[in-house]
Image (cartoon, rainbow, N blue to C red; front, side, top):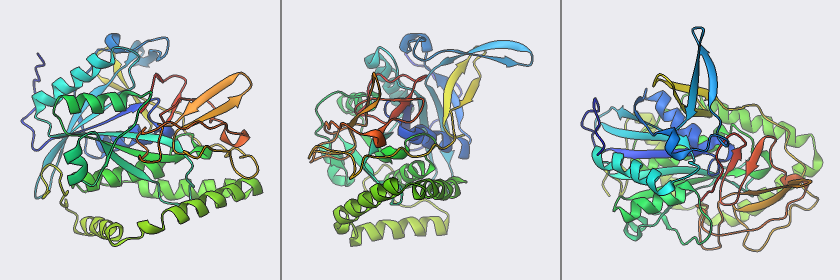
Length: 398
């Protein structure tokens, strides 16, 4: 039995979760939850026992000095709660951690136990994957669910993926079987500039989350960071004609595919977001609960029970050269890819996607990439995921 002491009764709570590793290309998803926690000053009320779920040879404990005393931090998943004020206040339960190494069913059951005790109305899981998307265009974000009614009322895709999956997919299915409405939001990160951070993808996830739950999310410095990130990648791409030509080919393909998206509905969504930000208040989330219908850090558990945040590697690397004419792709190309990263090294990337699915890990695509699809230094990517780092668990992804 989970007993929560010191946690007040929550108002229309929504659980928002993200996990570092396989489902977190560019650290975009975990950074989004970290941003919510920082902007709304989240209060940690629980941490899962690291001993139960993590292989410490994969996710190493860290030794640090605290006032001259040596302490050890352990990889874990932490839960915090934030209250969003305004005319209609509501609470968010934030879950941030590392994809577990083992006992995934118990891991999900424990999170669902917290959701039940807190009266959570909906679970939103954030993920990021590598895809054939140009950095110069808006980041594609797909919303998927296993709930037919939820897909219809909230304008989401119903997942039809079959194949290997990660903790995002497992948690979503666990929620469905437990009768808890669950949605996964997936941002597509350009594969040729996959190293973290990616503030543009983080911002795109937060904007879609804002639309989904009907809350105005403060952007802080993310908007400026996203502009600076794009400018930096523009400059790097301009230095290499092959990269510039490849980016242009992606732009043309994207623009052709998305001509129908310039619809009245898409324009209306952007206008509603503008009004929410102008008025400084929450807007309705059609079909959502309550409506009419630092960044890139590892969450760890310190020996004294206090949170300890370790910055993830930052910086920006030069985009790798793609092969002339762009990488070869199967006809079912999508966010899932499989790339040769060097002699004797093989990395598989991105939640798989089929022709009839969104980037939620909805189908499998194999890609034999050339030099331009090399994984970023220090990143070990897997199929059906975003890119994970060597010190993170990368067991699976959806």
